Length: 275
Length: 275
Image: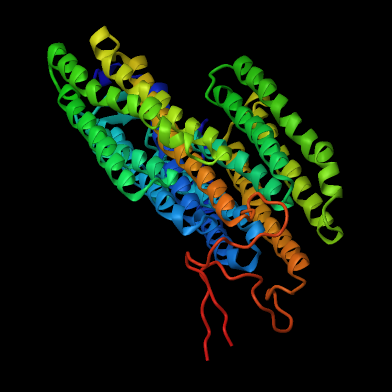
């Protein structure tokens, strides 16, 4: 990356985007974990993992932000690179953990049979991990040929996952209660659409996009894609879990809620006042 | 900003205001989350989000304070700018997240029908986000013309929100129980009044207010406005939620406490007192 070509305004915009990403991920984590008590125990693991994904992403946004700050020496009217490298690889460390877990969230909230849950988690999660592992050598490669080769290799598990989400899960989605099918379809498509950003950005250096504006586009674009794929996705998983909990208990979960509602169960740091 | 014109006393006053803001936001967050168990499940998401707003604001006051400190080199009797820029934009990053959530708090505590809750949250929250996004290019602009143009653009969603709070929500507020109507009106007006500060301050540089005293007025003024709009507002939301919980359960919530009272429900990290 040609970090030297960045202006002060571009540096600050990316810095603000990283800080925004950190705040969104941390806030979403707390919100998801506070909301665990709103769903029946069937869906609590999906919510726990949704919050873990945003928590892990928040940690990596902190690391990325600190690495970004250390790569530049900025004053009111000058900007210089310090020579300290900007560590892009934190993104890969993050994705290696969060991307398989994202798919597991979706599978868990569908509440399939146990064998199916495990096999789909292993296959989709494994493909996701493989996709990230194959992308990394391309990201750090010096030559366009190596970069492109690993892009192609990484696209194989990527396309397998897209196929599974759009076609392979069809049967399982059709068995979901009617009032959540739209939301689950939405979550599956949200994954596919937000993920499309990554392989496109990966090709930027190959087509000559490497200046300051390209760096801003890549970093801000990755941040937005991460927020959509992790935070927005996590909230969608929560919405699905709440609706399915209502289906199961026949009670309206108290959010945003009309009418009286009991919490669907007693877990989640609750209290009991006995005499 | 003409940071050079600041005196040591002015620097320290602003520093203390930022530290005050951080402490108020952090303390309010903890108070709100500790108080979640005092309200029925119907209002817990409103309290969770109120605490998230102050938590996010606290994080940004920490960032703003650190940025402020790094912009100056201060001894007992000298003050110099270091050249490190004071990053005003953290305020925009903060507002982009917290301002839509503030409106969602107010809508959630009203406990409208679910469809109405979602549509009002999307419209008011979306308008709030648009208002912040349109303000940012003006804030970082070099010329008065650009600053003024984006001020005007940003005022459009601002006025829409004010209209909704003062007129549009009227019907929903009138349907609230009588003993909380005054509080909810108060919360809506608190938003309008505390928000008026922001567009006025935004215009300061255009009317020539840029010296040390103006910087103090802007930074301390923003801090007071943030405390009113987020912390005081959050506590008002809690008061509304407590009173509505009492209406629903017919029991006095044990705060500030007269007589014995049971918690209205069983959740929220409380203790167990067994004999």
